[in-house]
Image (cartoon, rainbow, N blue to C red; front, side, top):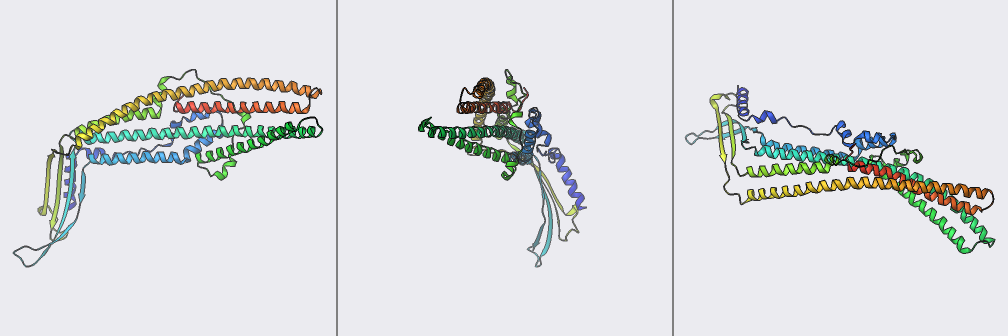
Length: 451
């Protein structure tokens, strides 16, 4: 009987508060699923590079990178903050048990009393103030999702750039080994010629210095390779101890299949996370202003209490021994020390800041896209010129080698010419891989768009 009365009270109260069943259990868990993550980074863009090893590193980073997990947890945090705000739209219901011992003035004996009050309170959102605050928090959820998307794009871009720098370093180390070998041979020949009085001591010392420097340059290249491998291990959440086992494509197998676009449509900017975030922030601050204005309006509350009182525990808990109250009221603060006016001015100020940030985000987006496209085009021109220079250097070395075989020039001359060829080839390797990194830069600037 008691349970039936309590259920009836709750049903009546929630009928008066219709938003209860509409929103009380409607909280969504806005966690990014696998399909969402894949769409964040446009995985097909990476697959078009035709390097399964790189694609595997990208997927591993998406699954294990700690920064990405933190960004996803921040989305969850923002969702829960929104749920805290939404709770103000819902009624609050509670129950308590109050045992009491009392003595009346006309009696000498005392008696016991058991009370089971059920409380309920609900603020009627007549003007939509609480709803606006929930919508404002929902905008923050969307902003946090855009920040999460930006983190994913940034991490996979870092994985790609690091990977290609490792491939480049592998090639540079290979060429540097050849340079060291040739400079050692040059030094030995110069030393022998010096002993025979054919070359000066100064020339021999210069050859030795060049040989020592080539070894020093090798140390720098190995240090760079070590750092890049460690960086890739962190990005993919692997132990640095396994970094030397990382597989990668050979530099000689690198083929850039992506075309360089003549121009980028301006609509690409609309897909950038920072631009979308600034636009959403502008909408949020508009909602905050509207909620601040509604704070000046009165609030309306419905209050209910249903209490069962009995001197015998649960035996006389019936409607005869119950107390039921259902009341409503309005409250309008007359003086708050100027806090509401200050809050309204504060929200208007934040709106102005958001508007300026929105305009700045558009210009910065234009600049970054244009810079990335400019870098790609000019570096491609530079690479073609260097490649042309390398072909000329290679041809020159071919004819120099013929002269050496015919005995026209010395071995020292052919070794010096070959070193010049290796140095030019190092420039080619550097600029070729730079084109891949520039492509990734354009990918990042356009938020992974396919134009």
